[in-house]
Image 1 (cartoon, helix red, strand yellow):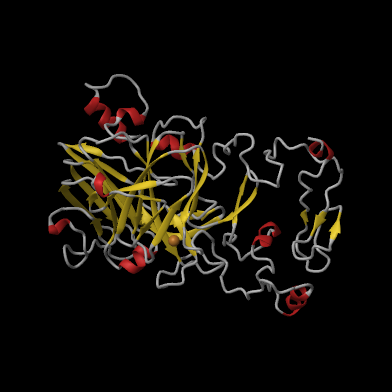
Image 2: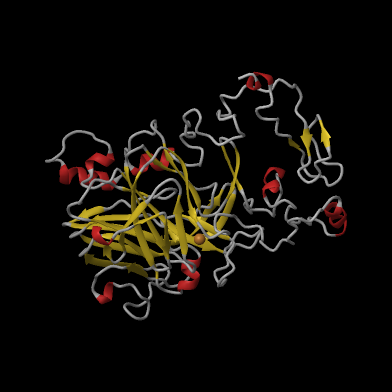
Length: 468
Ligand SMILES: [Cu+2]
């Protein structure tokens, strides 16, 4: 039962009649929390009442990788709270964690006793207790909530969420409004429980607690005005970069940035304890949005490989593997050649690079998602609808590039679908590590046991194409 819709329908029934999508019934564009949810509320004598339960959860951080996390209402990040400047809100927080907790309303202007700091502004919420926080919203912007008791453990396990306050009157229209929490974890390879005592050597990086290819894409139609809100209460700062667009940072958790002080960027650094809102007009395409630290758009698997770039490893790896089972060196031509190998990592551990696009492996992980700007993306109809339909990177297909706009060998310039099929019959299978191994049947490499992969067929070398 969606109480939020019901209560708002009652409030606005004099203004709007009949059934309408969520997005047109609310007096603001509701925020989409990709891979997350929005918290419903009830009304009690003019007060918006929200309920949060801090609890131990099972959380899928990427396809097939389930971790033991701590969160709110079954999720990390917890559900996004949305309200309007001037609202009176009451948040009932139940503690089902095994230790005391409290919830701090990050960036909020409120009475000191509602600030949610265990020991300083209140006594800790004991396991089983429910505390009421109540205050009036005196500002608007992207704020956050997070535990403020045993912070290193509780936040390191995932206890955080967005608290978004819409202005009473918007200055301009936003077509789609997204919120992404930045976070980093250390999950020992093969394990399921993050180790929150790690200070620097994190191995899993997430948007809304999902590592690519677990991240839901961000959707838009060309020309739409898009806002993306970034929040960080982690241990590291993250420079978040978008391809194909320039944006302006329009607000922080300290308030709006006046238009005269905004300047164009393609990357915004978000430090722990900060939120940043940026806006842009969407341009058609499939565009990465990712952290620009080199290791952050990658998944775990250990980054302490022997560096073998430029070193011939012909036959050596299999010999070492006789002595050291599972030995694997960085590929001699870089890491790209490792993508097609179907490498088996430890149990419950994501491959370091993953995800398939229309042209082959994307080879990314971690803090990476795709902004899909397509003409045929459906109009925004509400957050629940978005979260039901948009779950994996391939949702809503791929951008249809206009002819002649895809990089390829000189003279090719055609999309793979448009290219004539090469007429040579058989598929040749080869070993990514031993290119001299070639056979017409799939199987394993006789030298190292690696799964054989189909050889890429020559592009542009067929007769049909040459004669143009
Ligand atoms: Cu990062």
